[in-house]
Length: 103
Image (cartoon, rainbow, N blue to C red; front, side, top):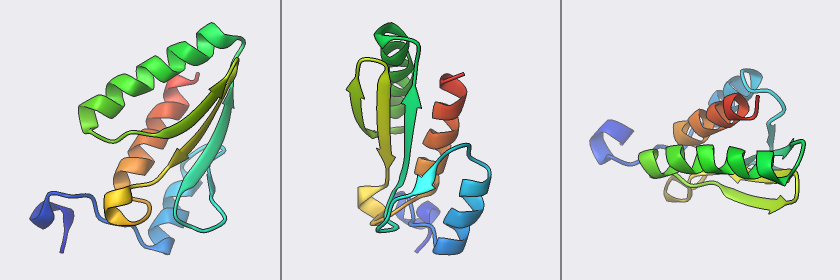
């Protein structure tokens, strides 16, 4: 069943994930293959929090929320789509947005 048919995101196959990762800067496949991960570093807490705020607005808009951990200037992110049981196009979209927001 496709996303259009179910209305829910579809898990990408391994080849699609590998291809998508080539277009993302610094994102890697988690060891279990079920998520993509990246650590962001900022000048200070204010910049890190601003980044998280920009991402939160998109997350709410597309109803897809990251798993993240923040301490001072560091934001560590894990993206996967629980409903799909792995990585979906939403994770790739979110990763690309995060890369832009971090610039």
